Length: 128
Image (cartoon, rainbow, N blue to C red; front, side, top):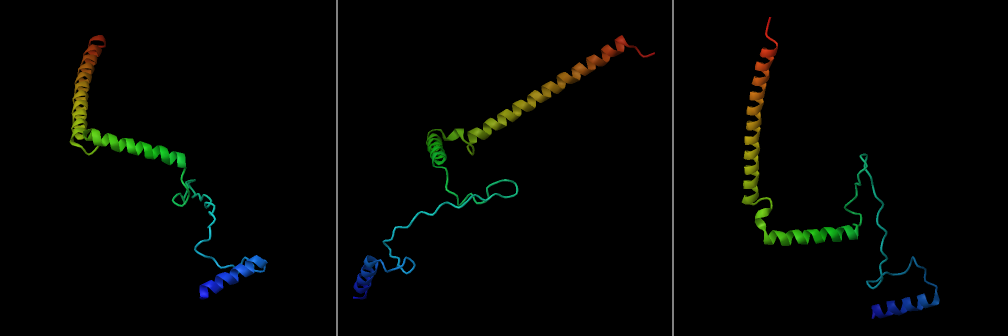
């Protein structure tokens, strides 16, 4: 009975225009207004420090979500191509071995070139 009396009382006061907005009771059915987003906060390095409370860019999030879905679908189709799989690590090891062999080859050729340059220098400029 108390609820009905309170609802009737509020209807009378609000229809008469005598009730102030500060005294108005809030109910679960009130429509809440959207609050504006907080302003950006920058630290001394110029970076945004309150990024977690700011609303995100809807278009950018949609593009990133689509890219993530495509990546996850591709990972289901070709799991050995991605990091953490044995295939990738074997390719990295193979590339490291090839680069080490090529470095050794270049060093051998450089030693031969330096030896030839030294003998040429002795031929052209003999010591006195």
